Image (tube, rainbow, N blue to C red; front, side):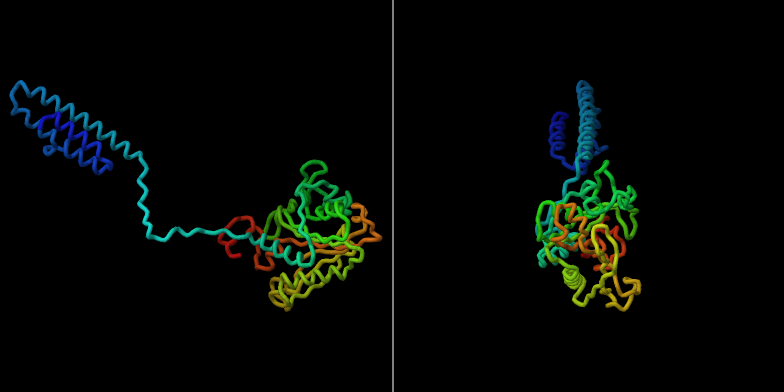
Length: 334
């Protein structure tokens, strides 16, 4: 076999090699010591006629150098190529997809909305960036009230705040509508609290408002009683404790009987048998005057509750931060 024939055959074999193993086989076949075809040609040179020895030896060495270079280049290209994807087996079961679900805070909010919607309340939303008028003044919160300090409210610019409660939505509704009305205002609120197991700088509230010509405290008590039994269980009891809020008079904190110990006393209720869940009261006449309602004609009540607190109580969660850490191991339990 002459050198040119070996060259044509070597280039053909090299073009067919697609793996490093096949390249190594080509290298051994043509460049291997003693058994390689080119080494055999070089070893046969002394037996050739003197006039052929120089040309054959030079051709064999040139081809040896050429094949060495081509094999090295081919190997470099293969090392840069990504490994071939394994062939899929269509008979194997497909990958299991993880399906998302509704966040526990959203579940809680929707449950509250559903309960009050059956009592005639309409869900309304409002802006999270508010003016001081809607966040404070229209709600009978004076300029020197502690809640208007920058330690308790996020100020974006003079007169503009991130709402610290969803009560401004109630003011906006009363400005645009005439009684009778029943509205429920859920949404995010913001306060510059230091974050810990019980506090967060962003959390959720649901506030309700009912206004009519003969709305009474008895209506408020009846509706909150229905809500407590629907949300916490049919054996739940409620009690009202006198309190103070600038926008309601009279005002009351509302407790529910502990649904874990049934009022006997446990760690959840701190041994009292009662758990505080929301604030409420009759709308202060000053709020009606701010929105153009006649306080001599209309009366109404309002209430507000923290969604995180309701969710933590209902599901036994002891750290508010788990709601925003996006740990699927926690959230997937609800």
